[in-house]
Image (cartoon, rainbow, N blue to C red; front, side, top):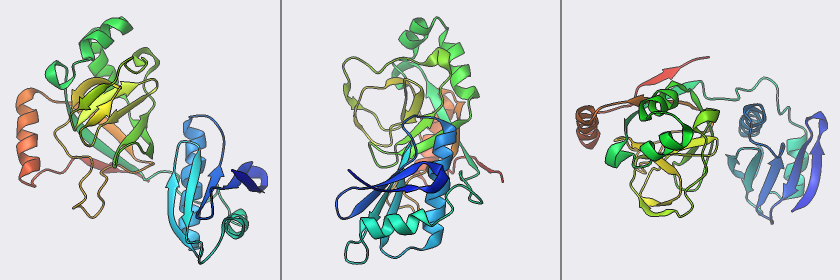
Length: 248
């Protein structure tokens, strides 16, 4: 991609991605402080109302800005973005914590026991440690509504499966490396499956189809089989909303 501009003291670079998109890069690592800059920049760009912007998509370390080439072009947009205050006075997170119920182990989480053994822990230890973290939603990708959540405790970090499964059930909770995630729909996948949630992470009929957004926080709550079935039935009847907390 062609570099169009470096943004002031932030060190961010604007790069053209064809004639209908612009990438704003902030670094090359996965860390919360860097992602906070990405989310703050996304908020600044959206709030500025710059002509020609179709969508702003944050990732771990960069922003993809989709544009209408009949209204603007990457070079002009890079100049406009370069004049914005990217890191100050904007909320870098949503202030929202979503609680997701999970049935751990067994058929719902077939990799829980082998993962625990690999980590030198009991399955209960894995569940407690996974549930104790307030995870950060870095970005959405791979599937609609698939949120990459960090940061997994070091003692639970394992590589992906050497051979991915062809079918991972919707709602499966997996871990891979320093991340955890919920599969919103059935798909192939190589993450280690430790549990499953009965709630829907993506529903195109909702006003906001994806339950999770970049900048959200997530807590996983262990439930038993009876609670799982009750929540699943309530979801099917449209009577369940996950517990959500808001903070400044």
